Amino acid sequence: MSLSSLKSEIAHKRIQEISVAKDGTIIDSDEALFPFPKGKTIAAFHPFFEGLQAFLPTLEEDTNFPCVNLEIEGSRKIVDIEILNKGNDVTILLFDFTEHYDASHPLVQEKNEVSIAKSKLEFDKRLLEAKENFKNGFLSNLNHEIRNPLNSMLGFLELLGETKLDYEQYETLKVIRKAGTHVKTLMEDMLDISKIERGIITKKHVNFHLGYILANIQNHYDLKYGGKKIEFIIATEEQMPKTFIGDPIRLNQILFNLLENAFRNTEQGAVTLDVSHENVDKKMAKVVFTVSDTGRGIAEEDLSKVFDSYFQLKLKKDKPLGEGLGLKIVKDLVALLEGSVSVSSEEGKGTTFVCEIPFEKRVSKREKKTVKKGTGIFQSRRILIVENDPTAQMLFMKTFLNNEKGYVIEMANNAEHMFSILAKKKYDLIILKKALPDVKAAELLKVLKGDFENQKRKIPVLMASGSTLINEQQEMLDAGVDAFLAKPYTKKELFKVIEKLMG
Image (tube, rainbow, N blue to C red; front, side, top):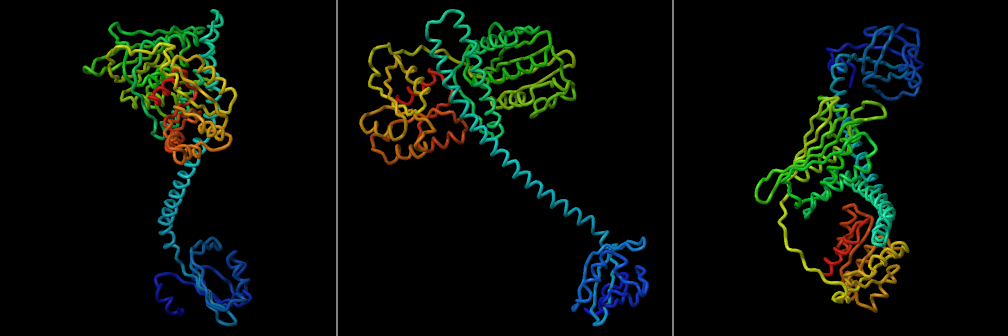
């Protein structure tokens, strides 16, 4: 493009023309934008021209530099620079586009901010996914490592409780069992946080005795907070039904979290659990649980936040008010049970939480007949247990010793041992652990359920494992496991699953 056409195209813009020798000496300038005195070197006026001066001796073709910020002797302008090669010298054209660039700057800035925000959102998403994967992996490993020894501990405590103990020994055993059960509950709570966040938590629909739950809560808090100057009261209405159908585990979690929150924030006075009900129809009843305390109370402006994740009211650096995540779990679990929860409070006087949860009424049924011990009906029920841990093997042996069901068990230390035994004898059930020393459980199940002899592949498989994350359980179920029993479990729970699998 010629100089005349350039001038014609942007005639509405100011242009400065500077003639410069190849060594950088200024030959002439029209001074339209900046002063460039003759005889001086162009490098003396701005760092841009300092770099340009070194480039001039090798210049062979015309070139240009858009959007250059120049500030010379107090005058600032944003210019496009065109350099035209004239042989022994060059012509430098400065096109003043200051207004244009200043006007377009907000649009460019906005575009950059949108781009940055989009990149940040994508980064945050990847970071969140990485954190979630790390958390789930950590929970899975921690869950498995704790549940296995916890299962052995609680199992042997259960067996110890069946022996002859004096009063002091029995009371000591009760304390240890409560502590172990509390650790189990903490494990369940920790996993439920992950399950709730991923929306995969499920609820049970089983018979339960509300009176037993309330009695257990009373005993627990009498023992835990008996030394504090706080009275704990559980009050139920006279016509309160004793049995319902629903999820007693989730109900326990809800009440324990609310009561822990009340005790944590009450120095003196009382914590009260009132239980009442309202008949919805012939099949359903709404049970109302009201947990109140005489504690510090919560400011009105903070009431709407108490169910948020990790929210805590800071009264003192070492004494936060509220359970934070515990109350978040309460809200989500109540919603899972299709109920509602509300809170009211007055600073300095206390707080009240009201949970309304619908439960199905339980209709009493005639007791099922039981098989008397020693009838021999189940003597042919043979169970093969694949377990390499000596402590777990001993627990199984003692659990099945003289059992009323008449189950006969045999141990295999690994997969190879298991297949060698199966080739010789018939079994009605296989109890399998997930982590075997010689093969992965999924590979073993593939052989057992797919390529093994027809009569062997029909044997039901029960997996007892400390891995309780839903995706891990589903992986084993897809591989061919017929039932999954999470550690720690009780003898009653184990026998119930066995009876179900073997019909």
